[in-house]
Length: 128
Image (cartoon, rainbow, N blue to C red; front, side, top):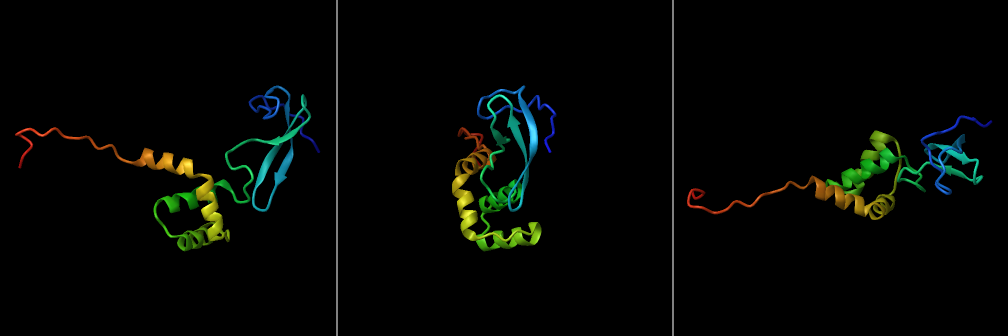
């Protein structure tokens, strides 16, 4: 069954038209369900881009694993944490794949979190 509601804010990723996109069911994989769209102009199906295309696990699991990795937690503890708190059994290699895939985002977040330290000019009043 097709929902014929126009999506005014959704843009087709192929032809870049926004007035011809309609809802067209759900796309499911092992763990996630995403809204699927259909463009009436070019006739193609697509899923809205969220930065986690082609992943099996939900975005909150991936971001939590990356956060724990950036904080310096070992892989086996990350794996155990995700299993205990989220219920997903992931391999160490999967976590390392995510780290490699999202390396640029991790480095940007690390730079943003780093405190800015100003240099103090040495004067005779600064001495102890």
